[in-house]
Length: 282
Image (cartoon, rainbow, N blue to C red; front, top):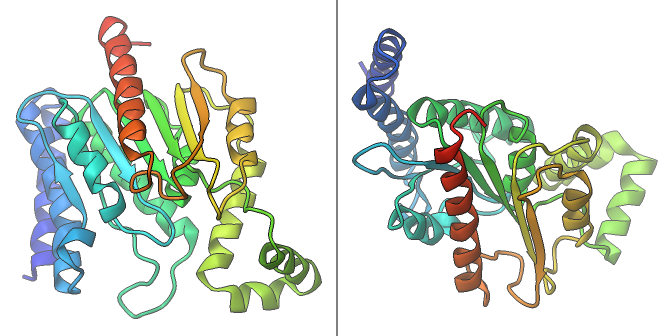
């Protein structure tokens, strides 16, 4: 049996154990580890560099947990430092690597990323009842859609991809989509998938019910600040926060403002976690 088959069998067996003993913390912990190992061994088999591989920082005992989703052009590396920062402060953190191509070198769809993220979130929510999603760029877009999941305690959206920044290139893209949409998506490749994801999210998100922290930098050259306004307009939770930082570029976890971003993210998650501890059913 291949390593992939062995891990799948282990996951299946652990799922059965969890179903029989849902309060057993050790089984829930091992199930999350097995899902991580499935991603990690896949990354290793395809010679993905160590920093770019999926990562899991797992506390020994019960803890709040974060599912992290990286950006369209990124890898878990862009969230690893933030993940370690949160781990050192008591959170368990899981970030699977989502690839733009499959094992046969064919481009995947953005819906594939969504499906993988839903599976990861389901596993993390089996591990902990106090779960948050942290997404950057396209990961933030997917996070918004995952925000509709019952039982999710909060969202952190770092420069969520909702509106592209207006430029000559984006205007040409818009003209291309209007004139020959089939041809446009055929040649746009992965950028076309990101555009589809943004369009879908703007149409489907009418209400953001769980507490949300949304951050973006004023000097973001890729995305429009209309995305932050969109989140503000649709947020219903009173404890939600949003801000446009003076500087930080598109990847906030690596830009000039990263220390401020790390602090804000931790404070937000800590506040929501304390709130959940006082009102577990809220």
